Length: 90
Length: 131
Image 1 (tube, each protein chain N blue to C red):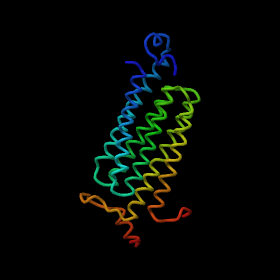
Image 2 (spheres, one colour):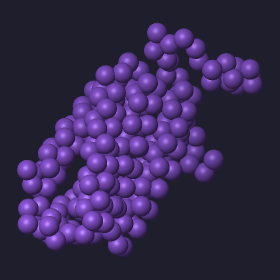
Image 3 (cartoon, rainbow over the protein chains, first blue to last red):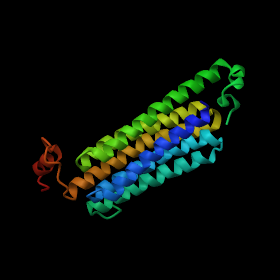
């Protein structure tokens, strides 16, 4: 078993996890469920990008990972503020 | 991708340090992906939003940090610095976001699962006279 096969198996597993998250986004009964699932999906895509860096050897995937983590964090905070019913500058 | 990862003949040329790095990095990646799987199963299976949030956030944060540490060990050099930076950021940001969402869910009136034994935050808020 070569290292590429190992990485492909890991990619498939992470893809399955992403589909589980998408199921929760689609089926979640309340809005915070969906917010949490999107946040978790973002964090998992960060791991995906790190593995893509190992697979391809190109380091811009790590830049993608950092900015994706940042945007996912800001999005989750904004959604939380919105759900709480406050204005954004409080 | 470094040649020693291709396996086979290249493994004989790799130094001991590179082999240890590759082995430890791969082990960390496997552990991290297992934690990711557990977190996602928790996200789908658990009964209410607070349970889901706790299972998913803790498992997936640790799993992703583990994968990033493994990637840093395998890649080395400047990419390792970037991966470590990303791991530290995820470790700080993801629990903060989860805390904010849990607080917002509680304040927007989402009740706990009917099998829950207590709601300490609700008691605190009623003691402070907020509700």
